[in-house]
Length: 363
Image 1 (cartoon, rainbow, N blue to C red):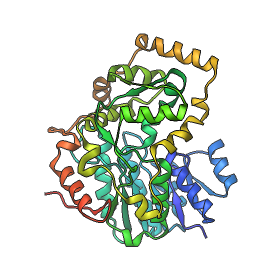
Image 2: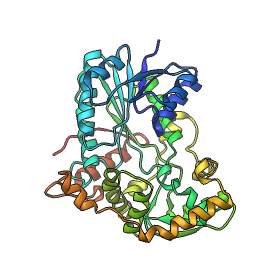
Image 3: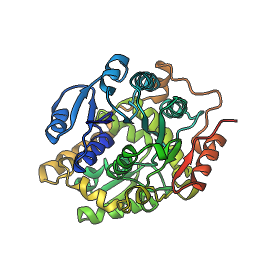
């Protein structure tokens, strides 16, 4: 019987969790928001497919019928907390026994990012659900954030850096998924705890560029990119401005040392899975093999033309975007690294089991 459900099952960590379950010969129900080629691939691999709108309580209730444990991935949407509430209502209606929640290392109550404030609130909402074991997985920086530019490195020999000289321990989607799969299998002993999977070492942007150079086989120059220039590239690539609205604050937190706070590296991957966290180089090799990073003369010429045209492209006015959509920051907005609530919670997380800590009350 399928007793585990994975939301956002075609997403980066969701798809990897489904793959972990199927590789272990375990049944899994993959929740998707529509039938498409990605969901058909999951079905062909052996997953049971459920289709639901994350804002629709009735559809979520149907998807959760017969399920004991669920992996909840927040929807990247201004109304994320509404979707989480719908999921909580459906979880109670169906007798769900456990939620493993993907959250965020920066989650805090006064953060300038709307998404980050909502994640902190959802942590509390799920923790308060009676009779449902709740486990938080709050990774730091995903390796994916630093490897989306693999095409720049492979085709143009440059590696854009937005984080200055600050460092983090990038973790792969696959390592996060492996931890989640273990927690889903037997979540009750982990109830009420946070786990922070990380990569095995702290790296700066320049250090990542050197690793990427070894992967692609030629010199790669780390280039400190101004955020206004990054916004032009992001708009050219069709990145949602809501994602960028929060991302600018995450880069500010990164430069202030939030991702190296309290050491920055955890043993969570090894503690939960029994194997060490993947090296950044190994993750980079997978990205270098993806179609978007494959090298050809034609692709290099197109990439060069696109890059030369970036300064002429429009960017985003994110402050205006926030005002237009009513995303008002708290009266005393603080980056995570400046928030005493965040610092106290993360210090407690560091003092507990490797990478794990219980939720704390807010004074």
